[in-house]
Length: 117
Image 1: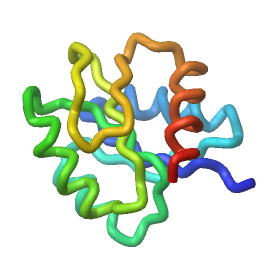
Image 2 (image 1 turned 135 degrees about the horizontal axis):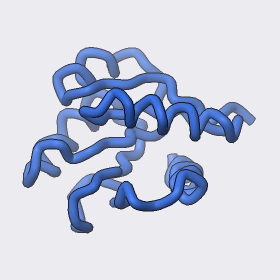
Image 3 (image 1 turned 30 degrees about the horizontal axis):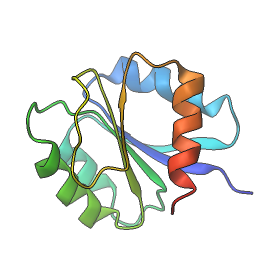
Image 4 (image 1 turned 90 degrees about the vertical axis):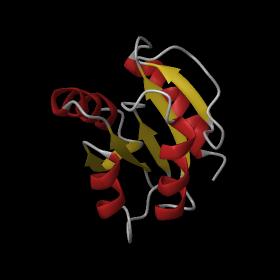
């Protein structure tokens, strides 16, 4: 079975590196793209085969406004909000996960969300 393909959008390059290394250790998840902003993500997503968009809400209060253009750029992908902001339901996102969860739990959630595609 091919790995779950993840595109990670977070404004911290160090955190993206850490997440990539931890997820890639599992073998069944591969971070295939990254971006530090919405604009960068939108320029890199077209033409990619992505199962899960792992997205930090780095623009407070703009969850739905971030989700819509990402969904247009990667319509088959499930959106997983992965942020340090308080829990809240973001319309269009499959799940909302706080960054305090462990990487094994994040891996489990990613594979669970990917199973919906």
